[in-house]
Length: 557
Image 1: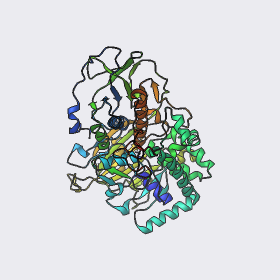
Image 2: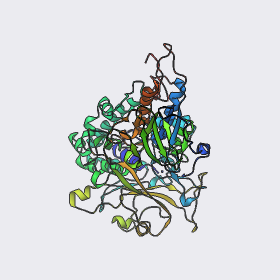
Image 3: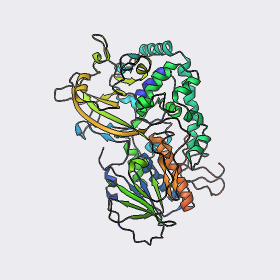
Image 4: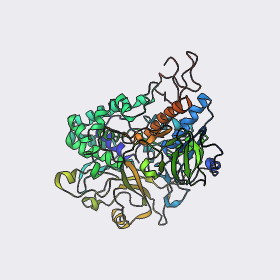
């Protein structure tokens, strides 16, 4: 099944665009099982500052932070221990998988962050370096001709696209041009390309380094797109109003759960552009969470799952003290990296830290299910007798805005291919029927009776998950501090700017670089080489495959 926003943008703009990773195996990976020994009480004087770093959180930010520290240690020959604390029982945060029917002989399903593209250079590089198998999002299209998309406003379809045939694709293009004109998709493509061209400088040898988010916004010339709503920004660009409030809004609703309070009238324009996802979307066979498990495994950090950090305190000019459920005694650290939303951690900070404004998060309901119904119930969508509903459904709030119509009951509903065994063989249920996997994002819980009506009583397995998945993203010119105190760093300060798995790995790279420079007189990349020499394993920094952190520039760069 193609990613829903991929369908949206490629059928709307019919030209290549770039994207970010956007829209969770709950098992501890075997290669980490040796890292779960209880922490021991430190045998150090109160004033000692050991060469030890604590990372709070083992999602994309925390796992990659451990990995970046390992890179810096190797390049500078540092002796630094790293402890990673994670209150859940798995690594990956918003990237994790589940098995249909709880049967681990079946292919797992992404519960959270689902796809990434080549422009996500850290994730893309990680898949290659760790020997993981990348699969194209189109590989599970079990019936390309039925792969239609509908844009639903709660009462009517404002747009539908056809399946995968050549003729139907041209009919879709004609529909798009007739409704929105040529300028809307072409101008949007240009805006997205400009944004991406600035973004990819974050991987270059001359990448910006920042101690506050405003400085990177300045470096990338993003103040306007962050200070205006998506609708304001697109309207000022002369883009068709309906395009923005229908197609672009559908992208923000599926990728960021931005409904009602944060449709395109509220969400800032940078994240609106980021929402316009991608051609060439990919995922990792077996689950994207493997990337973050490998970050940890390759860091040699000690990992403490099912562990809650209760308090963090500071001994004046001495060490940071972390108290957790891992042991009765606290643990001492030279530095601490907070790699989770501060106000969701409930940590008691017994130290003076810079104020961090409370950041509201979108409370998202994810409903995964299997059904033997190949498409949703057409009568729900007021379609005529014999009609077939689209298998990918996105939504817009425009019907509520313009005519006071009913609000869509879901953000998105997408079919994700057949239930298969791990070796790819389609499976049948007890009645001998094939089943499809369906994922629904919604603001409210989807009840069983609603599912029975939508899929005509043909629902097999259901799993529900609630997430505080993404921050609410209004226009802003103020951001949380990256440095909360001397030796205390905050990766998630980047989230009000862009919130994706990929940007978490970029933000953690910046924090680690800052920490190593300030606390260890080192860094992520060592630049004092013999002229003309390269770091071992570095790519040519003029090559488009150069990725700062994975690679290091030469002195000449």
